[in-house]
Image 1 (cartoon, rainbow, N blue to C red):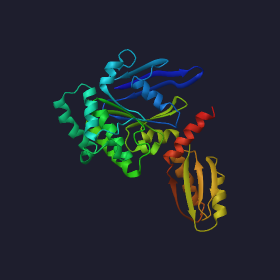
Image 2: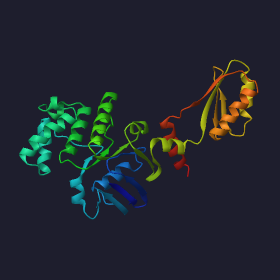
Image 3: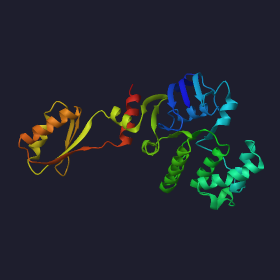
Image 4: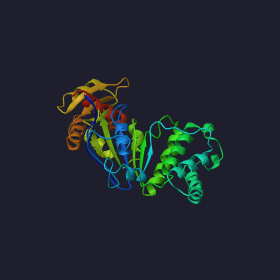
Amino acid sequence: MIETINLTKSYGSFTALNELNIEVKKGSVYGLVGQNGAGKSTTFQILSTLMVPTSGTAIVDGVDVVKNPAEVRRRIGYMPDFFGVYDQFRTSEYLDFYGGSYGLTVTERKQVIPKLLELVNLSHKANDYVDVLSRGMKQRLCLARCLIHDPSVLILDEPASGLDPRARIEMREILKELKSMDKTIIISSHILPELAEMCDQIGVVDHGKLVANGSVMEIHDKLQQQKMIQVHAFDRHEDVFSFFKEDNDVTTIRMEADGSIEFGYKGSDYQQQKLLKRAVLADLPLLGFNQIETDLEDIFMDITKEVESK
């Protein structure tokens, strides 16, 4: 449904996008995550035909964005990271204006606008002026605007930016509903956990390059360089510390103020099991041990830090 092949955008000596290759399947939600300036908006502007790539190819719903931009525009709904709203319009008038711009008849607009307002939970605001809407409501109104011509593909650039927690949840629920309607969605954010909750696949982009791609769990498993293990003992903490420190697969180790011990472990699950079994057989006074789940944001920071150091 969406595919980029060696997509590149340069400005003189500066490369904003460097041979990006992504593929988004029909009816799926794909998240593009990266820090500000990583290349997300550049990618979305090319996919939306607002910018021409320096080289490479971008295909949306089977149509080349450079060779046939008009056809691409008919098939997409694009929500930019910064969008304008006409404050002196009522909410329903705002959608009516855009429906007319897309060539919908008066009858068609009268039928679709109430349905869109219901979808984005703005039916009760149909006669309110846009300038009195909250930021979250304006975001949802912009999303409704993107849907006015019933596009098959949605390109959403930071749709949850600046929203409070409740508004984020509302936006997420709307996106789930759109997915159930078989819309193909590509969405960007600089917050990895935010996308993890709603996406089938995630791509991590940094300095214009795709540095990771796959499901949330695939990215987690691939990029987590080591497991973090926490061990609790009721006494002889120094002996326990020394035991684990001597293992060749223990990369880092520290003792916490409460006497618990945390260490990074690079060995396999089988090797980890053997290590913990040896600790029990060594008659160490262990109370328990568990694997610490790595935070998704920590993984994201590790990925981008690695790219910057190269």
